[in-house]
Image 1: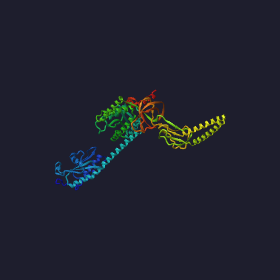
Image 2 (image 1 turned 90 degrees about the horizontal axis):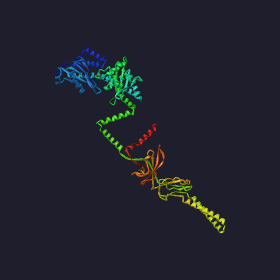
Image 3 (image 1 turned 60 degrees about the vertical axis):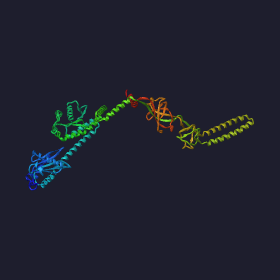
Image 4 (image 1 turned 180 degrees about the vertical axis):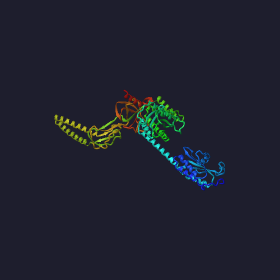
Length: 626
């Protein structure tokens, strides 16, 4: 501390006139630059023995001088090291306390730096060149800078708030324009709504929107203009201005922005001269990293918003261009014909195939080509598919032999019966009584007949002989009915239909079918073939049948006959095709359903898989063509 002189911060008050002048400038500052200069001057006037001062503030990604004291052009480059140290360490720094530092600095001087932080982010630093003083007084200098930094923090916060408010306003304007575009389905209507809304928000006298088509920009909408002639010179000049901005991939303005150097504005100048505009601004529309079109804004002389487009308006238009591009591209794609989309799709796949970073697509393309070649050249078995049901080769009906009542019914549909097994029995009590009556009648007539023969009464014997024959016939008929009251199975079979278990005692009429039986060892297959495939089916063809109720290998069959009558089902016509099973598997029952496939010869695989669509297309063309 021997190098520190006796000059102190607290013992000598600043000059009242200089401090009063600094406070006055600080209170009346109307801009950010003036505020920073007044603040630095006030701090230097409140701290004694300050040789020079520097205020650094962050702009974008760099720290730039915001104020220099005592003169704006004073050389303060020697304060850069201590400023960098304070920014890196994010704390107050004093340079010149040890002997090594004093050797590199002017005699009797120290450098004091203090970082400015806002929301844990370093936004700048203030650096002072002081005459040396004791360390406690240097701490007082740091405290003074700490308290004074609050004013700069408030300034930075106000500036950030204004930036955020402007950003929110631009975002809201962009969303409003997006909403205006989304309200319309057609591209032309959406474009007209966008240019009208943007003309109002940007204070432009005319806003034009153009979209790129076949390598050049085509004007699609002009604000407050329902129709325009695309062949006029003005339209061509507007399109040239849009292409100029698209080629440079940036917003282009006339008069040019001083901050934007190196941009070509020849087309913008031509448009301003031809249209008599005071200012022209063109902003590209982009989507997915490529230019889609452009927006061109024009202001005439005497416009209330000003003769030129300011930075805020240019930024608003740039944001609108970025947000509006994908929306307009979606609407543009929706209006393109299939040919255009197909061409784009083919071109996109071509680029992917040529991309060396996508080997999987190349492998897929090779496999697709090989598969297409196989389908076009290889043959396969063409099989006609049809719904199938299994029936018995014949069906025997068990009908009521006469009118009577059900007395017994031990079987029902689905039961398997053996030959001679009882199916049902009818009530025979009335028949037995009738048999007794005719038996008694027969005996009486026989007795009278014998008496007539004994008396040699020829006429009476003839009458009684006829009556006896009648009684014998009635008795035989009754005996026959009694024998037919028991319905038995004529062969080993399965009961296909019929259930009298819930009808015991119920009357039945003569000839009513009570049961249907199908043999267990003889079946036939009925296939319902669609009329579109019946032309491929013929007798003698082989096929296979897969039944729902039998899990295992398919069952082979041979087509026997095709009926010439179709049956409508589910909006289609089906023909009945009968086939014979090669061998009946165990567990097969009449009524089982499944899917049958009839082998109809060898065909190209491509034809097999596309024949349904090809036939439909051929029939549709035949119906549509005159």
